[in-house]
Image (cartoon, rainbow, N blue to C red; front, top):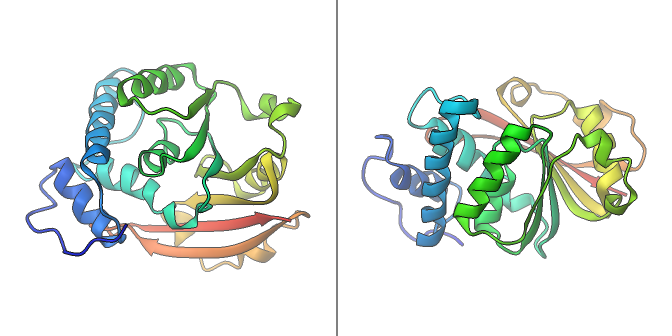
Length: 231
């Protein structure tokens, strides 16, 4: 949903709602009250658990809302429109899958994470978010790939800098159904590289569809999303 008016006020003072509303406006999004409320819960749980198990790096007031929440939401325009099953591989503290699910409640989201402590956080967070349609898979990806029931069963696979590209492509081939999409979200190091990703990796059965280069709203940090399609 697009925004009709530019938000006003100081969005850089660390106020979660103000930052999210302003940054979302830059992406062409309007966040509803219920969505903002869930992001507020998400932030509080991250701050609480971060003191115990170090989920994410927080060096400024903009880090959580911009470098994690908004960064995750930049993948929204590339997701399949009809919803379907989305697999977030190496989700960690739920990124990018959970912010996407907060906006796209129609998604059947699966979060794959090997760390027991991070899985404990995700379970408690989901309980407080009251967000149905989310499945947590507590295993290493290599073990999950040995099981037949999830092979070629997802419309979309996404990962935010959790795997190197060749490995991620092989994972995507395994889990995606024909025509399914793989979204590789990359940070500043790869975002600044002018590389032809379509010819870097010779992996049959998956092709590059689009490369999106952009900067995060307010923070100005470079990002890249590489979109692949399974044949």
